[in-house]
Image (cartoon, rainbow, N blue to C red; front, side):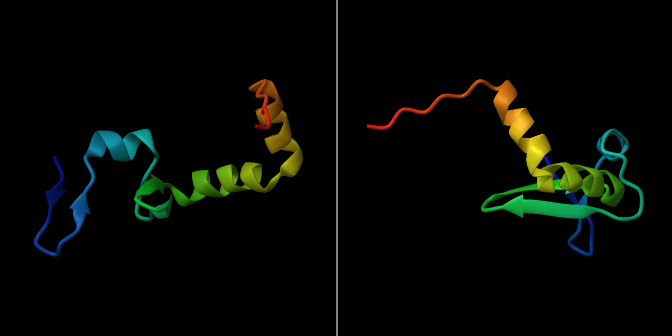
Amino acid sequence: MLEIDKAGRILIPQFLRDAIHLDSQVKVVGIGHYFELWSPDLWNEENKLIEDGVTRAEMFEDLNLTFKNG
């Protein structure tokens, strides 16, 4: 259950803030109905990996995915 303060903000429990290294700032990243909360520093590291095409290709290669037409 979410706890909301008088200003309408969602309060994130301390154990979750600790788990994702949230301090005074948060980066909200999402698409559609889903979003994630990231510490800005950790998001910057993750975003570098996302933008690195070689690293992404290697990650997907390890999944051994195959596609069939028709």
